[in-house]
Length: 102
Image (cartoon, rainbow, N blue to C red; front, top):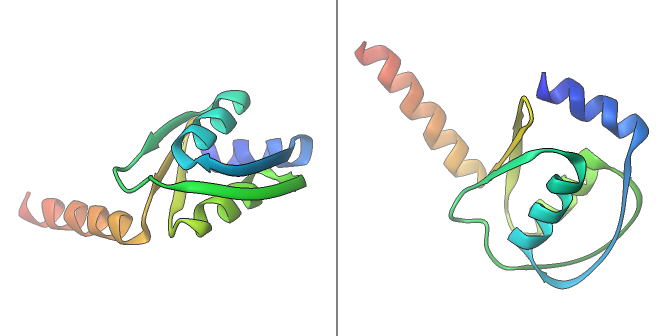
């Protein structure tokens, strides 16, 4: 459902930003607040970002911003979760392990 919402908003909303040496977490909060999403960042969401975006679809903008920091995101309903790929893989592995134990 969250993926459908992002796809729908990409047709309507494109991101325009000039970001220079800004705090990554603050930048993400600003973007998701403007779009009406919630943000759940992992502890690895740190550092700064510099990027210029003109009429970039939301999904691509997030990909570009997060790739600079070695991060990725998952959309669940109206929540955007941000972490490293490794953190998401570890979480999935733990979920599978927990299911096997039950």
